[in-house]
Length: 169
Image (cartoon, rainbow, N blue to C red; front, side):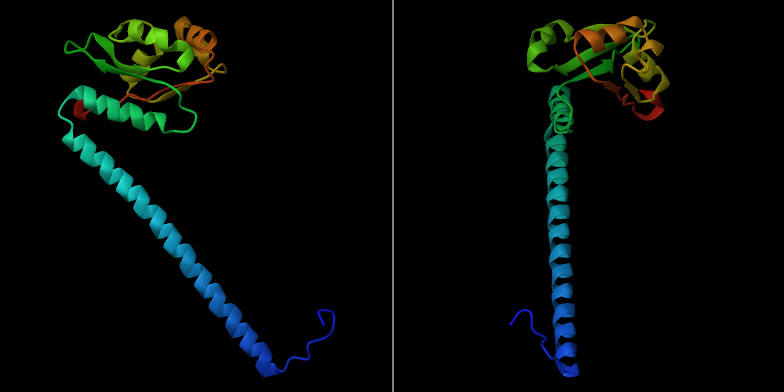
């Protein structure tokens, strides 16, 4: 019976077309609902993060929240958060998380001071208030320590995002 002509009337064809249109509309409604649900989940997650930030009174708590959000980004397996000291002479490593094979360096790098007049890509990005993405193709444009970090730590890239308040502070 599958291979034989169905001999449908004009009325049968119209009924089938209406049925297909109603299914198509129903599927579109399901897609919209799913999209709204995903959007709501994202909004709920953002609201939860904002609540956590609002509830945090200590800088260390805020930096931990920031670090946890960074680690949710695909491909990110470590981070270093440097803040300017009160004299604006150094960037100080306030929070750091490294991949398992480099965990031993965390204690050494925590509270490390990068002189603002010294040669470091982090300092350059901060001074220019501009993000940097550094990989082997452009590492030669930065201080030698940058290429050393890429090679010694087996990094694919270094992403530096300076965050400054109003007036560049």
